[in-house]
Image 1 (cartoon, one colour):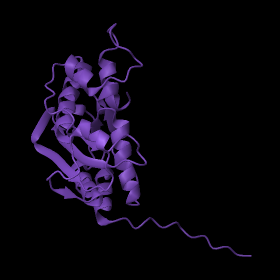
Image 2 (cartoon, rainbow, N blue to C red; image 1 turned 90 degrees about the horizontal axis):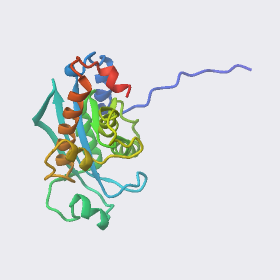
Image 3 (cartoon, rainbow, N blue to C red; image 1 turned 45 degrees about the vertical axis):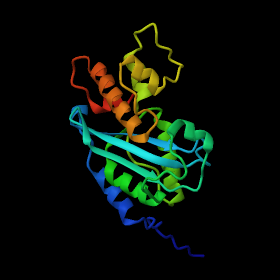
Image 4 (tube, rainbow, N blue to C red; image 1 turned 120 degrees about the horizontal axis):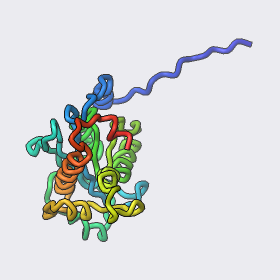
Length: 221
Protein backbone atom coordinates (compact mmCIF):
# COMPACT_ATOMS: atom_id res chain seq x y z
CA UNK A 1 0.00 0.00 0.00
CA UNK A 2 1.30 3.48 -0.85
CA UNK A 3 0.76 6.53 1.26
CA UNK A 4 0.92 10.09 0.12
CA UNK A 5 2.34 12.57 2.58
CA UNK A 6 1.22 16.10 2.24
CA UNK A 7 2.96 19.11 3.65
CA UNK A 8 0.67 20.86 6.08
CA UNK A 9 -0.38 24.13 4.53
CA UNK A 10 0.05 27.33 6.48
CA UNK A 11 -3.34 28.79 7.45
CA UNK A 12 -4.56 31.49 5.13
CA UNK A 13 -4.51 34.37 7.60
CA UNK A 14 -5.81 37.85 6.71
CA UNK A 15 -3.38 40.45 5.39
CA UNK A 16 -3.32 42.50 8.59
CA UNK A 17 -2.09 39.47 10.53
CA UNK A 18 0.63 38.61 8.01
CA UNK A 19 1.80 42.25 8.12
CA UNK A 20 1.96 41.98 11.91
CA UNK A 21 3.98 38.75 11.70
CA UNK A 22 6.42 40.30 9.22
CA UNK A 23 7.62 42.66 11.96
CA UNK A 24 9.15 39.77 13.91
CA UNK A 25 11.68 38.85 11.23
CA UNK A 26 14.11 41.42 12.64
CA UNK A 27 15.75 40.93 16.05
CA UNK A 28 15.00 43.12 19.06
CA UNK A 29 17.68 45.66 20.05
CA UNK A 30 20.37 44.54 22.46
CA UNK A 31 19.86 47.41 24.90
CA UNK A 32 16.63 48.53 26.51
CA UNK A 33 17.25 52.19 25.70
CA UNK A 34 17.17 51.31 21.98
CA UNK A 35 13.90 49.37 22.19
CA UNK A 36 10.37 50.58 21.71
CA UNK A 37 7.89 49.50 24.37
CA UNK A 38 4.12 49.76 24.24
CA UNK A 39 2.49 50.12 27.64
CA UNK A 40 -1.16 49.15 27.46
CA UNK A 41 -4.28 48.45 29.47
CA UNK A 42 -7.59 46.80 28.61
CA UNK A 43 -10.83 47.66 30.39
CA UNK A 44 -13.21 44.70 30.40
CA UNK A 45 -16.71 43.68 31.41
CA UNK A 46 -15.23 41.45 34.13
CA UNK A 47 -12.42 39.05 34.98
CA UNK A 48 -13.63 35.84 33.36
CA UNK A 49 -11.48 35.42 30.25
CA UNK A 50 -13.89 32.98 28.61
CA UNK A 51 -17.08 34.95 29.24
CA UNK A 52 -16.13 38.61 29.56
CA UNK A 53 -15.15 40.97 26.77
CA UNK A 54 -12.87 43.95 26.15
CA UNK A 55 -14.57 47.35 26.35
CA UNK A 56 -11.59 49.56 25.57
CA UNK A 57 -7.84 49.43 24.98
CA UNK A 58 -5.45 52.24 25.81
CA UNK A 59 -1.74 52.34 25.06
CA UNK A 60 1.23 54.67 24.91
CA UNK A 61 4.63 54.25 23.28
CA UNK A 62 7.91 54.45 25.20
CA UNK A 63 10.92 55.02 22.97
CA UNK A 64 14.52 55.89 23.87
CA UNK A 65 13.50 56.23 27.54
CA UNK A 66 10.81 58.79 26.63
CA UNK A 67 7.06 58.42 27.02
CA UNK A 68 5.72 59.55 23.66
CA UNK A 69 2.51 61.14 24.89
CA UNK A 70 1.51 62.21 21.38
CA UNK A 71 1.96 58.64 20.10
CA UNK A 72 -0.88 57.09 22.03
CA UNK A 73 -3.66 54.63 21.24
CA UNK A 74 -7.23 54.53 22.54
CA UNK A 75 -10.16 52.61 21.16
CA UNK A 76 -13.62 51.56 22.35
CA UNK A 77 -15.23 48.31 21.30
CA UNK A 78 -18.79 47.39 20.45
CA UNK A 79 -19.90 44.64 22.82
CA UNK A 80 -23.11 42.77 23.47
CA UNK A 81 -21.82 41.59 26.85
CA UNK A 82 -22.62 43.99 29.68
CA UNK A 83 -21.89 43.80 33.40
CA UNK A 84 -23.41 46.57 35.50
CA UNK A 85 -21.08 45.76 38.41
CA UNK A 86 -17.92 46.43 36.40
CA UNK A 87 -19.19 49.92 35.47
CA UNK A 88 -18.28 50.94 39.04
CA UNK A 89 -14.63 50.30 38.09
CA UNK A 90 -14.20 51.47 34.49
CA UNK A 91 -17.14 53.90 34.25
CA UNK A 92 -18.04 52.84 30.69
CA UNK A 93 -21.82 52.69 30.51
CA UNK A 94 -23.74 50.69 27.91
CA UNK A 95 -25.10 53.70 26.01
CA UNK A 96 -22.13 56.00 26.45
CA UNK A 97 -21.76 58.26 23.44
CA UNK A 98 -18.28 57.36 22.26
CA UNK A 99 -17.25 56.04 18.88
CA UNK A 100 -17.03 52.25 19.01
CA UNK A 101 -15.65 49.76 16.53
CA UNK A 102 -16.02 46.02 16.13
CA UNK A 103 -13.73 43.69 18.08
CA UNK A 104 -12.04 42.69 14.82
CA UNK A 105 -11.40 46.30 13.79
CA UNK A 106 -10.07 47.16 17.25
CA UNK A 107 -7.62 44.25 17.24
CA UNK A 108 -6.56 45.07 13.68
CA UNK A 109 -5.69 48.63 14.73
CA UNK A 110 -4.00 47.46 17.93
CA UNK A 111 -1.74 45.04 16.05
CA UNK A 112 -0.77 47.78 13.61
CA UNK A 113 0.12 50.03 16.55
CA UNK A 114 2.18 47.56 18.59
CA UNK A 115 4.09 45.87 15.73
CA UNK A 116 6.99 43.87 17.25
CA UNK A 117 7.40 46.04 20.35
CA UNK A 118 7.86 44.72 23.86
CA UNK A 119 4.47 44.98 25.54
CA UNK A 120 4.21 46.26 29.11
CA UNK A 121 1.19 45.99 31.38
CA UNK A 122 0.39 45.73 35.08
CA UNK A 123 -0.62 42.16 35.93
CA UNK A 124 -0.04 41.58 32.24
CA UNK A 125 -1.30 37.99 32.18
CA UNK A 126 -4.92 39.13 32.35
CA UNK A 127 -4.71 41.82 29.66
CA UNK A 128 -2.70 39.59 27.32
CA UNK A 129 -5.13 36.75 27.98
CA UNK A 130 -8.11 38.91 27.04
CA UNK A 131 -6.41 40.03 23.82
CA UNK A 132 -5.54 36.43 22.95
CA UNK A 133 -9.13 35.30 23.59
CA UNK A 134 -10.34 37.96 21.18
CA UNK A 135 -7.79 36.81 18.60
CA UNK A 136 -8.98 33.22 19.04
CA UNK A 137 -12.54 34.31 18.26
CA UNK A 138 -11.11 35.65 15.01
CA UNK A 139 -9.39 32.29 14.35
CA UNK A 140 -5.97 33.88 14.77
CA UNK A 141 -2.91 32.82 16.82
CA UNK A 142 -1.80 34.44 20.06
CA UNK A 143 0.22 37.64 20.26
CA UNK A 144 3.87 37.15 19.33
CA UNK A 145 5.28 40.05 21.35
CA UNK A 146 7.53 39.71 24.36
CA UNK A 147 5.78 40.92 27.51
CA UNK A 148 6.86 42.66 30.72
CA UNK A 149 4.76 42.90 33.88
CA UNK A 150 5.29 46.01 36.01
CA UNK A 151 4.10 44.07 39.05
CA UNK A 152 6.97 41.61 38.64
CA UNK A 153 9.50 44.32 37.79
CA UNK A 154 8.46 46.40 40.81
CA UNK A 155 9.25 43.53 43.16
CA UNK A 156 12.70 43.19 41.58
CA UNK A 157 13.51 46.77 42.59
CA UNK A 158 12.35 46.25 46.18
CA UNK A 159 13.82 42.88 47.14
CA UNK A 160 16.34 44.49 49.47
CA UNK A 161 13.54 46.27 51.33
CA UNK A 162 12.06 44.71 54.44
CA UNK A 163 8.69 46.17 53.40
CA UNK A 164 8.30 44.04 50.27
CA UNK A 165 6.06 40.98 50.36
CA UNK A 166 7.15 38.56 47.65
CA UNK A 167 3.77 36.83 47.61
CA UNK A 168 1.65 39.97 47.44
CA UNK A 169 0.20 40.99 44.05
CA UNK A 170 0.95 44.71 44.29
CA UNK A 171 -1.71 46.79 42.58
CA UNK A 172 -1.10 49.70 40.25
CA UNK A 173 -2.39 51.94 43.05
CA UNK A 174 0.27 50.51 45.40
CA UNK A 175 3.05 51.29 42.92
CA UNK A 176 1.64 54.73 42.13
CA UNK A 177 1.58 55.53 45.83
CA UNK A 178 5.16 54.28 46.29
CA UNK A 179 6.39 56.45 43.41
CA UNK A 180 4.09 59.44 44.09
CA UNK A 181 2.33 59.12 40.70
CA UNK A 182 -0.89 61.08 40.15
CA UNK A 183 -3.80 58.65 39.58
CA UNK A 184 -6.58 61.05 38.63
CA UNK A 185 -7.25 59.15 35.36
CA UNK A 186 -7.21 55.73 37.05
CA UNK A 187 -9.55 53.03 35.65
CA UNK A 188 -9.71 54.34 32.12
CA UNK A 189 -7.70 52.28 29.65
CA UNK A 190 -5.73 55.29 28.41
CA UNK A 191 -5.26 56.65 31.93
CA UNK A 192 -4.06 53.35 33.35
CA UNK A 193 -1.69 52.88 30.41
CA UNK A 194 -0.13 56.29 31.08
CA UNK A 195 0.15 55.68 34.84
CA UNK A 196 1.73 52.28 34.12
CA UNK A 197 4.16 53.92 31.67
CA UNK A 198 5.34 56.36 34.35
CA UNK A 199 5.71 53.50 36.82
CA UNK A 200 7.62 51.51 34.20
CA UNK A 201 10.07 54.38 33.64
CA UNK A 202 10.68 54.74 37.38
CA UNK A 203 11.17 50.98 37.74
CA UNK A 204 13.59 50.91 34.81
CA UNK A 205 15.68 53.72 36.30
CA UNK A 206 16.06 51.66 39.48
CA UNK A 207 16.93 48.48 37.60
CA UNK A 208 19.75 50.19 35.72
CA UNK A 209 21.87 50.84 38.83
CA UNK A 210 24.13 53.08 36.78
CA UNK A 211 24.58 50.52 34.01
CA UNK A 212 23.23 50.37 30.48
CA UNK A 213 20.45 47.81 30.78
CA UNK A 214 20.36 44.91 28.34
CA UNK A 215 16.89 44.07 27.08
CA UNK A 216 17.43 40.34 27.58
CA UNK A 217 18.13 40.90 31.26
CA UNK A 218 14.74 42.43 31.99
CA UNK A 219 12.93 39.95 29.72
CA UNK A 220 14.44 37.14 31.80
CA UNK A 221 12.98 38.43 35.07
